[in-house]
Each structure stands twice: as C-alpha cells, then as structure tokens.
Image (cartoon, rainbow, N blue to C red; front, top):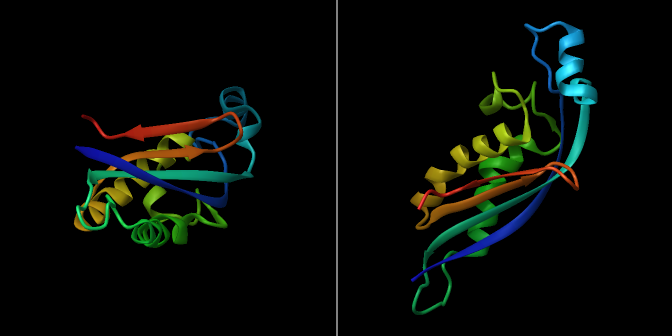
Length: 137
C-alpha cells in the first residue's frame, strides 16, 4: 500500500503579472495591482508517494526530500525575481498556477530517480491564494 509523505518550505520572491504585448491599461484592468512589481513570502509543500520500507518504515528520507527541493527549486527561487532571474520560468506569466506547474516539472525526474514519485506540489502565494498540482491516479 502506497503512502505519501511531505514537507513544507518557504521562499521569498518578487514578480509582476504583466503581458508586454498588452497596453498598460489592459494589464491593470486584467491583473489589477499585481501588474505592479511586488513580492510574496511563499509556502511550498511537496509530497512524494511510495511504498514503506520494511526496515525503516519510511516512504522517503525527509532529509533527501529537503535536499532535492533545495537544489532543484529553492536555490533558484528564494529572494529572486521570478520574471527576470529564473530561467525555467522564462516566457511564462508568473502566476501561482504556472509557478506550481514549473516546480512540478523541475522535481518529477529527480524524485523518481531517488526512489519515489512526486504526489503533490502546493504553492501558497498569500494567505488566501494557492495552487495545487497533484499526480494523476
């Protein structure tokens, strides 16, 4: 029987929701104050799923999960501008939905190569706004 385990992380980043091909007026109309450069203290939750090891009782080593998230995600995002500083977000509007999907894409392969499968990525942008990407079962 598979079981999921997860960890929470935090990062601070700046961004702007703005389409350069649109007029400033249209950007403000669609994105409101988010059309201005601003920042958030994000919470990232990453869960992996797999079978429990009979000897350790663990699905996945939590310290290994921390190391993977640090290497593949946080080193690139923390205290950065999501629009200007993150190559794997280049060309994407930095909505919480797009950031969540991009994190999923970054972590899927390294997690699998480490012996588990990515189950869920949840990014909380503010106290009221978050996005979730979950494994398709």
